Length: 281
Figure 1 (tube, rainbow, N blue to C red):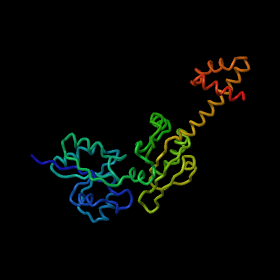
Figure 2: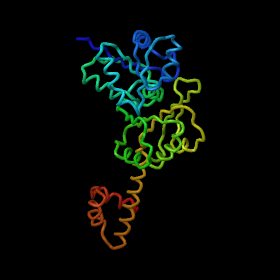
Figure 3: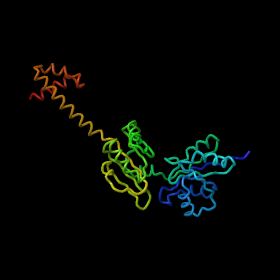
Figure 4: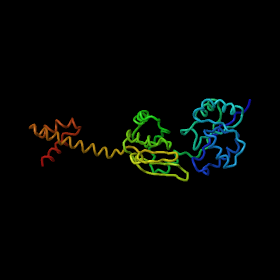
């Protein structure tokens, strides 16, 4: 019985080719079969590091499911296979999940070779405190209705992180502004490349920008609840004052007013009585 090969899940650079790890280079050098999202992008790395004689198997999104059996047969024959995405870490909004899942089903050994990811790269330079977590959404749905459904069912207290392409970002930003309101956000564009841009802004300002070049990672901050809470307190105070004045005009005594409004405003009658005295002074 043939010994099964191993499936190496290898992270590639997200821009600067020198960001590849020594271990990734070692695995790429020693493994003949490489399944990849984009053969053109992979050839740039192979040529740069003079890694020749590789057999490349295309595994982009539209053909991922139908190519899995072919790769599994190679692994079951005893040969190792490398899985890479176009850039960064496989399966992080990139193809490969079906292959990895089937490899587990076939009891094939999976070996992770960690490295660059636009997700961790952007978060690491954002300055955001992440000890309470964040929500990664990959690429948002294309339609505004679907974006709205997704975003409205998410918890509101976490930063939202997602990827976007340059030709879709303007429309997406306008949709986000309408759905979420004008929130602070962090733009990470062309990470590790010559024209890298790291920018704190807000959704309204970015939605008015004319041009975006290169792949984008956007982090949207939670709604500033402190301002909302202050507004709500002020509104409650004004409404309470109006109700007090209204009942006074009806001839009710101070203690009666306090008793009547306590339940409505969910404040103790004692507190409302103090407010009545303040207004009267």
